Image (cartoon, rainbow, N blue to C red; front, side, top):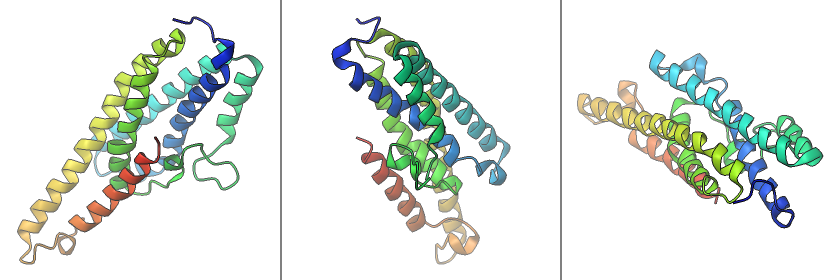
Length: 200
């Protein structure tokens, strides 16, 4: 167990922390307008909780950079504030965090798939030999489970409502009943699942 950063892995360890930290404000930036179209107060509350937790995760990664990586750690933390999700000149590090999240189906699929990848990453970081990183990611790992719950149950609710509307229509056309049809749901799932695979 390392209490301080060993010199021979300093660069790699810093890159891991920077990449993880960069995802946290990115998802908040992607989701910043969703509150205007929340389908329910329950969904709005979940969105706010996810965003608050992402902000706390950013703080945790910035703390590690400031505390253990000196001047270049502080510079990396500043760079995280300069990058913006989807910005052509200064995008976020990982591609999935530059994709727009314009709809609640985007948000649910993002949380279902991209946060699942995040869960595995945090589980690996929680086993790090660099003890401050391992301890810091423990609470992040726990909160990530809530993000997955929001995504999974959100997609389930959309699919369930689609099935209800298909039953009500003689042609099983959920779209004619004002809902989201199955091909559209599948398209969103394929999109976010594909971007989540690219995170590895």
